[in-house]
Image (tube, rainbow, N blue to C red):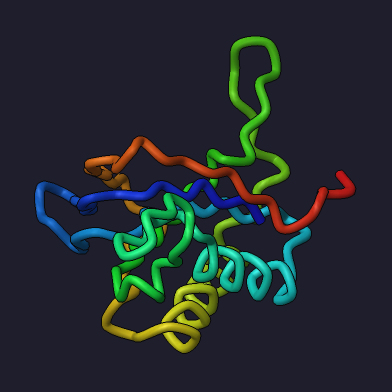
Length: 153
């Protein structure tokens, strides 16, 4: 599993011109599912994202000291199979991404995992499989790439 984690002042997802999810300060997490991902990959990504110290501590002045949970901020998860795209010549190939029929329930369980590990109302998501417009105001900018494991394929 691959996650691109961005610290944001705000973020939202639009589908067909309608805002389906929006957050204030927190993390926008683009999530790519690999064909070999299992529950332990989801557990790892959830734990790491919720505990990443990407926020400043105003009291101590430390720049990288607080997690999204410690700040009581929000998380917006967006499924993005293109994170496992491979260029073959000039054409993208997504054969190592998890197929949609398997990815949809797996992604839904990942969202639920985040909601149970943090707070249900603080974790939002886009619409799986939809053409989405993701809007964000990157704070920093701060962007971290996270892989659950090195895929064997």
